[in-house]
Image (cartoon, rainbow, N blue to C red):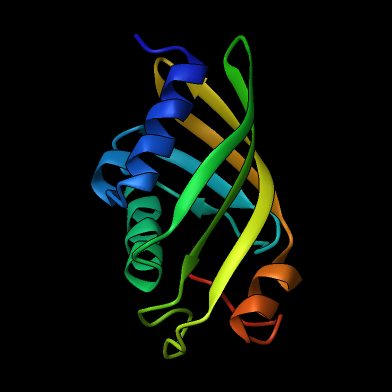
Length: 141
């Protein structure tokens, strides 16, 4: 069974391959993903998969780089940098070809080799500002 660090590294690999199915397979069926800047958690593997698929459709060159990754028992803490170019519909808006670069952190609770809970921190104003979106735009992820 994979440890927390290994699961997060597999998640990053799936993310960088823009493979929503592979990333979703790393979650428990009833997992929760709370991206604090968005406010509302996404609950359930299928909903998480759908959000990732929408994100990858909007930003087909998206990427995440590991800045640091710390493991403590069932928890992994990730500091990341990443970005992408807006090429597909996102949050009800048409693409404008703008790119973004963002830094953030995430915390993953991994139980029995799968993500049970994920919490992410990043700056919404920085991301949406680079895309030219109003900060209050509701994001699907």
